[in-house]
Length: 633
Image (tube, rainbow, N blue to C red; front, side, top):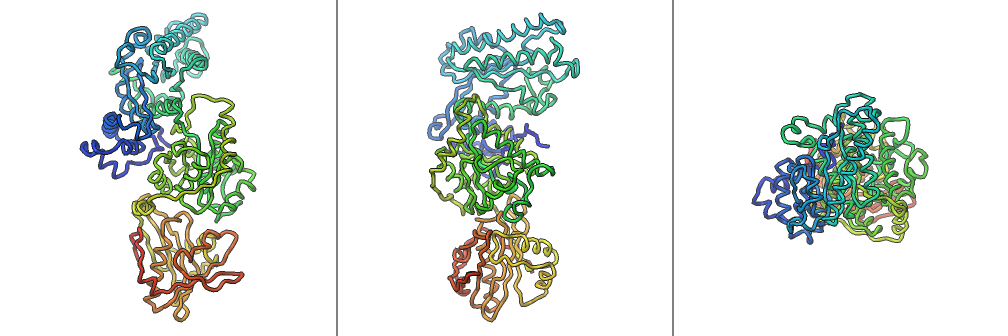
């Protein structure tokens, strides 16, 4: 189970952020852009305090950073002092630089009807947050079951709230954000509590209904705090001890989530909500890898728990599209193969025409996301990427920091829940234009054809701290080697298949060069990701089999493997390396593999292409590659 109060969509704090936040001197030297980047990470309470202070000190830089300045008056019936720093940092995540105007505890009437806003220092308000608390509303406790009395009670409370908001608006000229009421944890009448007029829950429900009606008829906004409390549970929300001690309206543990969602609402009101959801495919929209498992082999739909979890991700995306969020695909895949799933699997929740852009290729994600932004004519700060691969998430964060990239964990059943709790698609209105927006963007995207290249890829690869382990075939790796040889279709130069017995024979055959490669990085173990078989023939080595997992494409693994094969061939007295490419319906992505690695073209037939590499020349030009190489005999 995930803990929404822990903001699970935020990535862990990076080492450079830790170094800066641990030093007040260094924090004073960084730019506001750096502060915004740090705000996107999981932070301690101390980090939040320091970062909020640094952000306030950098307010003059807001225009250059792309942040929108927002002056927020916080007016609550409960103590709100502890909220300000978290709210400032949360605002940064959504492109807002908050200037918070503080007010006295439980003085809403004074703000509405007094002289507070006449003070020059209290001018220029963009929003007033009106925080309500059921304990301060003064509900009567002696009216349970008295229908007419409780109706008057609700009408009086609702009228008072409307009057306060109208008074504040008249003085500030700005909208109020009204926090609806969260009920007490205990239900005195059990399951009957909502049904009987005059119970606390009934009164809260009735007042909240009046608040919704008011918001619908005015320029004010609703902050649905009741919904947030239902997500995390009233037991987690309330802390009676802190209410009695300091009149805190909710538990301290709730503060980060509360602040995050309030900032999301203000961002939406300022037109800063995200507009596009970019989806990965393999193991994000369905279980499995389409290039290897095939259309019928992937897991989606009813009949399995995993398939239903992925279907729920698609249901989330479809619902977002219905309210105007634009959907796009960015996947490392063969496009024709990827499209087959949407065309042939009737149990898919999404169809091709649900997407305004469909980028399935072997380019890096950052380039594809840039392309999608250009196709849709939207800034990168409009985009959210949902991807199960932590390495892909990290490179997009580093290369395109404007793009929102939530951590979604490892359990597909939680993907949709985490993505929606992050608040990227917060909404303050809905109309017919919203309903049609996704289709309009899809039509516009069909006219775009620009592609950009990801920046500073070498620095990113170095940051992954990759360790590549190479060793010959052995009994320990045999089962996985056989699986890869017989399952891999896309990054597979010859698509030759070998049985377990044949692989075991190669282990014992000194005339065959075998190699299994495993990769780890700072995110974890990628497992065995490549298999190579070479057959020496006089002074030439022929690469019989070379396959690799597509999940590590664009990490330069193939270059490192080639360097090792070249050195091994040279040590064995070979002069040339022969590569063979046998085209299939699924391995088009490696069509230029040997050419890109520096091989010279040889003979081409209807069945295959031959490529040659001079070993001495290749060995004399070693590559600078981002791996720690670990060799095991």
